[in-house]
Image 1 (cartoon, one colour):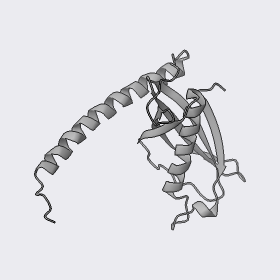
Image 2 (image 1 turned 90 degrees about the vertical axis):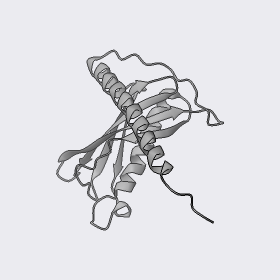
Image 3 (image 1 turned 45 degrees about the vertical axis):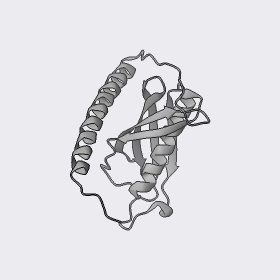
Image 4 (image 1 turned 45 degrees about the horizontal axis):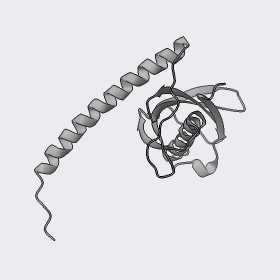
Length: 167
């Protein structure tokens, strides 16, 4: 395994359960962020912060007692930012049945002690799967930038029409 990949497994316990008896989405997001953080730090060899999380969709419930494995990879590297992809697989450890429950993408930014972005090692994809992940990550980055512009314009339009609140 290269320094661009990380696999972590966590047993789902009753303390992670929601009112419906499944694993709470917030607990899963917390673990996903830890996995992305660890993968990014392992690659960059410096502290990182989470900039964004894309396409988190809870496709299937995860149950108490399942062993959940998080497969993470560095898909794209910029000057100080990187995309970390995470695939989530839940396993019933009594029956060995495994399910791919969801995947998502984190943008992490390498930072100094003063929380200033810092340069990280470059990455040139070499295998076919690395090249595909890189191209898809680049397309997601471009889409994020376009959506951010659109959202900024919409927010400015809405807030420009609001009347100031009188104290």
